[in-house]
Structures are given as structure tokens and as C-alpha cells.
Image 1 (cartoon, rainbow, N blue to C red):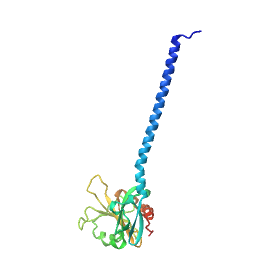
Image 2 (cartoon, rainbow, N blue to C red):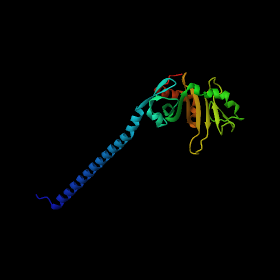
Image 3 (cartoon, helix red, strand yellow):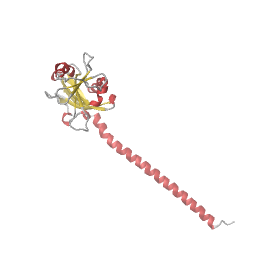
Image 4 (cartoon, rainbow, N blue to C red):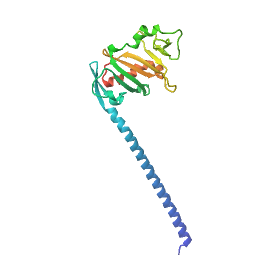
Length: 223
């Protein structure tokens, strides 16, 4: 029995359409896989230099203490060399505080006064009347616009014998956050000047604990 030509042609058309659909799907899968491979390659190329930079370290000796510092942490390339240092300027991300960036300047202990000492020796004599609220557990006091203090505010823990003290100042650019400064003793020979965004003030109790693993990682002994 002969098959009608019309039926044979319809079947052929259906097979051709099916084959075309399969081919298009295969091409789409190939393009998708190629795109994923390209994205992975780009990500790898971006991450690799950063990973190498974080892995590279230099040896800096300050106040007789050798420190091993990742090159990526230095604020200036000129400091990222082996040898002796009078101060070390770093920018680090504090994982315990959501990866917030904090600038650190490590100095020999005799070169600076800790902020807790400045509270009674300097700041208290420059306070204006009234207090500033907004940071749980800390007292805020504006400083007089004299003696180099312009629009600055000191935040301190009034209940501690060795209080947390930070001096915060507005920055010129309206889009940039106010910055706070705090100097603390981190060992018998070293002190560190911390510069951090004012948004971290509400977590002031966590700051030292968040800083500890960063300092330990470069070889600073615990106080």
C-alpha cells in the first residue's frame, strides 16, 4: 500500500521542525556554558591579584618589635618594604564589625598620649555646657571652637576607670561620613591611633575585640 505523498511530506516537516528545535536548544546550552566559563575566568583573573597581594608580606620592625604585615594593608606603597619603621600606617577591614574599614597608625608608646589620658588632661577643659545624646553607654560633649578644635565632639564612657574615649569631627565633604579618632596602648612598647567612621560608635564595646585578631595576625602581643 503506497503512502500518500502529502502524509510523507507532513511527517518530514515535523521531523525537520523537531530537529531544528533540538539544534537551537543545543546551541543555547553551548552559549550559556561559554558565558559561565567566561564569567568564571574573569572572576578568577580579578581575584587572583588580590589574593596574591593579601598573601605577600613584609617585615617591619618598630620599637624593637618585628611585625609581619600583608602588603595589601599598607596605606602607602612606600611603607610596604622590609626594614625599620618609626610608624606604620594601615587600613584594615574588621570582619567582626561587618568588614568596616578602619585606619590604623602603629606608633612607639612614648610618642603618643592615650585618649583616656587626654580626657582628663585636655578635653575636659574644653567642654562646652550640655551633652550630646545618641550613642548608648557614652556621654557626648562638644569641644570649644578654639585651640584647634572646630566642631569636634568627644564621646566617652563615664563609668570606667580606663574609659573608652573617641574624638569625632565632621569632614568637609557632605557625602563623606564623620570620622572618629582614638589612641590606645596595645603593648608595653606600642600604641595605635584608630580612625574609624562615626557609624561604628554604637558598637564601641566591640571595637577592641574586633581589633585584637588583626593586631595578633601581624605579631603584636596582647596587652
